[in-house]
Length: 165
Image 1 (tube, rainbow, N blue to C red):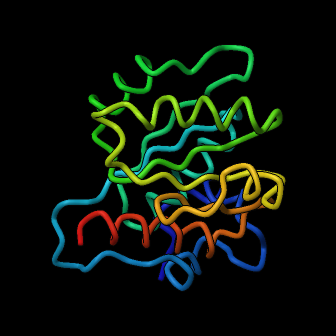
Image 2 (cartoon, rainbow, N blue to C red):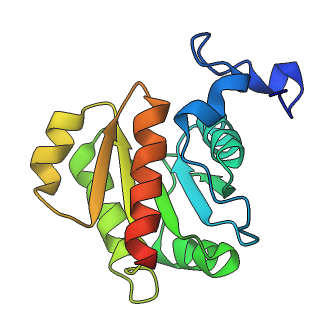
Image 3 (cartoon, helix red, strand yellow):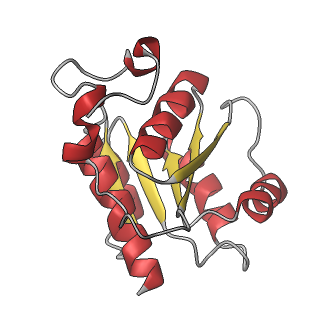
């Protein structure tokens, strides 16, 4: 299968994966599907937002992203406006240090009535610390960094599947 992107667009992929192999690790949507689920990516790094939205597009999703610098608050109103505009089926949200503060920010927006039905996949550099902070929950999956694209794609697919069940 030929890469649909320019060679430079796939430079971020690990050499062991490569752009041509994305379909091997990413859950594909049925070819008869005309509606693509929407994945929203929130991360402090614009490069990471770009990388993940490109990856999820390759997986067959419609991907939208928003960088949220740690120095600027990601308020409930901002997230609500983003969600209203894009209607994501799942949110991939990065929890960076300080974990408790950023987890609280995530909970604040996720507890909003019009957002709480959207599953959230959390990403973090310290999966163990965040797991202890979040506690056991079936509503949220945590994926550690560095990103294992197979695990991240699987977490997003499971979240979408659970939502449409």
